[in-house]
Image 1 (cartoon, helix red, strand yellow):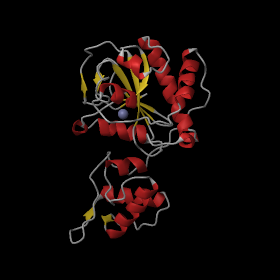
Image 2 (tube, rainbow, N blue to C red):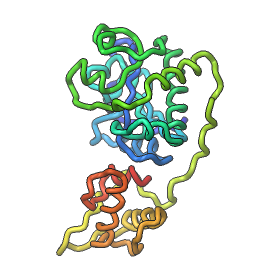
Image 3 (cartoon, rainbow, N blue to C red):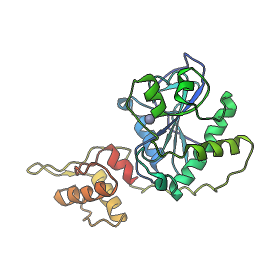
Image 4 (cartoon, protein in one colour):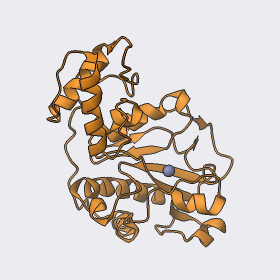
Length: 265
Ligand SMILES: [Zn+2]
């Protein structure tokens, strides 16, 4: 397992671990999402973290189990936080696509390992059980509803809980992987440190230029978007970025910020 350490944590624990909290990273589906989000958590300015980030081919460790990650206020001190690639808004079909099935398989193996190590029953807690301090697995939405310190609703109402808990039990019972892990695909060699600068086009201002602009244009080109790779972030780059952002259900502002970098990674 790769480790990309986050400074955003409290050393140690003030309470015993009793809950596993499932999140979505609010990203597109690509094989670099776990690494990209882990790099994002590695920045002090992010002021957030999780123990693990998972995508369809990797699990990345950001915070050790013995330290307190900052992910779900109300359930940080006694929780283990796992971030999954994808969005809370996914429907049933989107949770059942190949990418998500690979992702859920990896996540279930990890959650089973946690259940075993920390003696947590492989069951989803009701909100009443969470409130009562019982041990089990919950979503960030449950933590938000019970402790009312956040409005995050991930992993969303269509997250396949029954199927997921079944998979966790399968691994807890010593079952072997039901889906082979995907081979790791490398990100583009010229991909900058995530998330890099925010690339913006402002009419009348000098154009932004540099290796990150070239990397971004190359990435769009590799994804078959119409773009000239000239290392300058001009009106055409911004327009093509908007097309990409619409396709990824991002805010189509033409600015390559952290979410947009992440979605393309
Ligand atoms: Zn969350």
